[in-house]
View 1 (cartoon, helix red, strand yellow):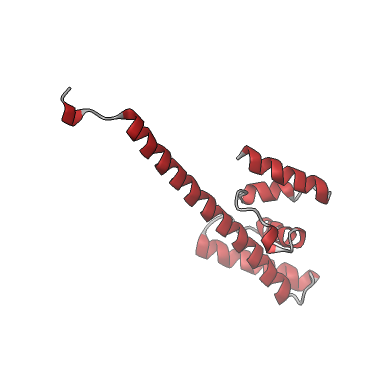
View 2: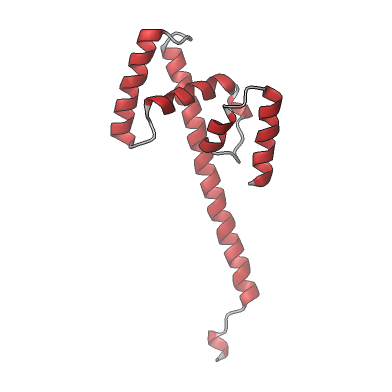
Length: 130
């Protein structure tokens, strides 16, 4: 093999590491923006409902919103997913408490943990594993 065709593997491994880190950062950033967007959507719904979940109006609003968002943005905006967004907003009312290392799936699982201290523990565990 001539010198022109020889690839320094250590050099290339550094480039691979850089590329993989960049891809992971982009992925985490995009996920975090979607998590914050879901939080903001539910905040807007709660505000539209006058700060409370009014039975008939709330059901109609969520149902129509689900139809329109599914039409405009594709799957993932079912009535049940919009309800998770409500629970998400009510559980994490301070948007600054959201963690960039966690995605929507993590938060949906964390919503099932009712104890605040236990939820905080599991959030930290998820971050350490990722």
